[in-house]
Structure formats: C-alpha cells, structure tokens
Image (cartoon, rainbow, N blue to C red; front, top):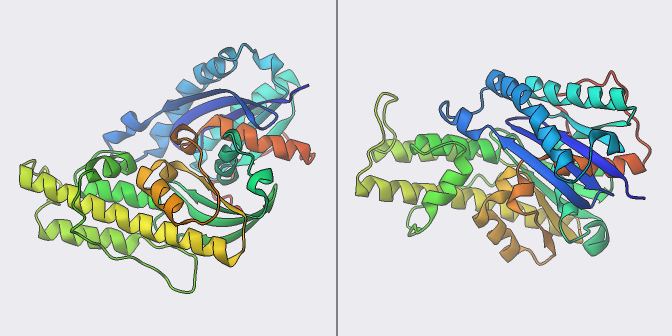
Length: 346
C-alpha cells in the first residue's frame, strides 16, 4: 500500500502544502504566493509574511488534500519545514503540522528546507538515486542560500561551498531594486535581459581555490555603473523610462545575470569533477532562471536533473518527498520540536 505524506512549507513567503505518495508520485501541490503583497516593500517583511501565513494556511491545506480526493484523516504522515527560514513564518507551519499530527494520531516529521529543495528532483521522471546514482553534486540556490553539497546517499551530505555574503536570490533582488525593477528580482532580471546585446560586462568574484561564492562585490559594481549612467537615482526620484535608459537597464541586467550564471555554473561543474560524482541535482528558486539552467546543461558532461520551475520555488510537495526517505530510516520527531531559523545542511 502506498505511503501518503502531507508536506507543509512556510519558511518564507509562500504558504504551501502538497501530497506525495512513496516519495515519488505527486498527488497535489498548492502554493499561495505573497510576492504581490511584499512587492510594495521591495522585499519580504517577516511580520507581514507571518500574518499572511496564518490567513492562508487553512485553505491551502484543505485544497491540497481535497484536490486529490483525500481528507486529512487519509494522510499517513505529516511533514513540515522547521528550518532554515524566517522564525515567525516557520512557526505557523510547524504548529499547524503538530495540531494535525496530534489530532489524528499521525507521525510527525521535521524537514530541513534545503534538503527538501534537493528532493524536488525526485518528483521528476528521473530517480537520481538510481540514474545516475550516488554520489551527486547538489546545488541549492534560493533567496537565502547558495550552497554546493556532496550527496553520498539519502540523508548523507557534505557542505562543499556556500555564499560568504549575499545569496544569489538576494543579489538578484538587490540588483532589480538598483535598476528600478520589481520584486522578486530574479524573474524581473531575466525578463528585461531578453534581447540584450551582451556588450556590457561586470566582474566575477571567483574566490580561487574554494567552491564558495560572493555576490556582494558584483552588486556594488552594478550600483556604481547604474549611478554613473543615471539609472540609479535618489529614493525620491523614479528611474527614467525613456528608450535610452530602458536599453541601458536591459544591458546592465543582462551583464549582472551573466556574471551570476558564469560563477555558479563554473563552480558547480568544477565541484562535480573534483568529487567524481555521477550527476548533478539542482534545486531552489534561483534554479527557475532559464539562463542558469541553460548554461549548466551546456557545461556539464554529466547528467543534470532539474525540477520544473514550479517545483524549484518553495512548495509542500518537496517537503513530503524528502520526508518519505526520513520515514524509511525510522526517524521520529517529538511534539516539542521547535523551529530552527539557522538550520544547516551538511
């Protein structure tokens, strides 16, 4: 009989729930995004996010189970992200999961948000554990993390590289703000970069002899370029919308995107070569960037497994898929489980 797991995800600004069978079969994946709510602030406001999770969580949970013809009582396991993330956001999801688990007598499993992003690839037609098999080079690139991990088996990770300042997603958001674009920054940068000539170039922080990342200097270089060319103005002024400025914004956005893509793809492929992995697994919201996906596929001599964009962003299905393998290992989580905003992986 199939093991049905309900996954709950509220680590940042998406209220999400999904149902997955046997860690592989996607039954439902419901996501309520707060992007429009936070766009007026140019970034996620933690208190606003927490309150919105409280409003959205019940209807999201109901839709997740009802859309696949189930009730909460039909779920075998309740899984929830307990870190890393925003403390207030995490608390809403964790408390809901505890309530369901306790009321229905179902096992509770706490899931690491970063590990869940990796397991989104198990919801694709591929089975990374068998084809290509372990070890795997994993890239988790999101708003708060840019990590390279060596995955040698289910639950067995070694952190190989990480960002030393801004994560790639944060850098995209800040770059978009500099260029007068919307939030979230990644999709906006990708959108306006289309059709750029590629004549502009921005620096790369290679950080030789390490697989770590740094995007703070790139952000500063973009700011200086935008200031020198009249694109970035005082807060009280709006970015000009004339044709010349629009073209310049497109070129600067493209140059920024190319710098991020170049460094991430090069370091990932180099890490894969050094550790003699069998394949690459990608996860996290930044992986939805088409240019990054394209470049990694072009550079890698090994199989690359990439979830569709809807499974790259935060979602409950990836939490449920990850929890399945924890359940197989016999992991049990107590009802006094607390959130861990800085929870590491590897």
